[in-house]
Length: 152
Image (cartoon, helix red, strand yellow):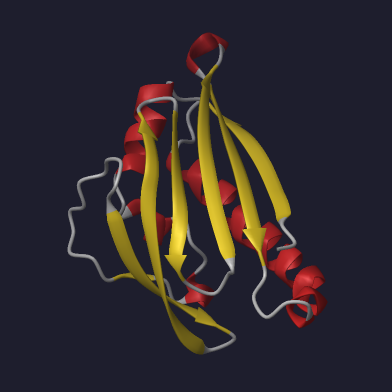
């Protein structure tokens, strides 16, 4: 299986515990996902986040509705958590969220996504589009998070 890596990071002027609490509330995922993805959480809210938690979603991929199920496979507040796709559009999707405490009450948010595209080897033809979409999704996410935590 051919795997790819997407990484991004940002710094917010908020202490790590507060940032982690924001991510620990699954309903915030809808807020930081671009509306064009038609993202909806199907699992009843509130969701108790812990290792083993399953979350079901729907997303729109080129206007086609897709079901997506993830499992929290690592839960280490307020340092990190990892979710992995059990069912969805990717052959593999493992998203590692890392929260680094910085000086002056700031937090670095790092995202590391290991993914593999479906339908090998033909799925690889979509790699440039997928990379572009991931970049746009995480750009939207960062903009929204900075709007949510504006004070420096």
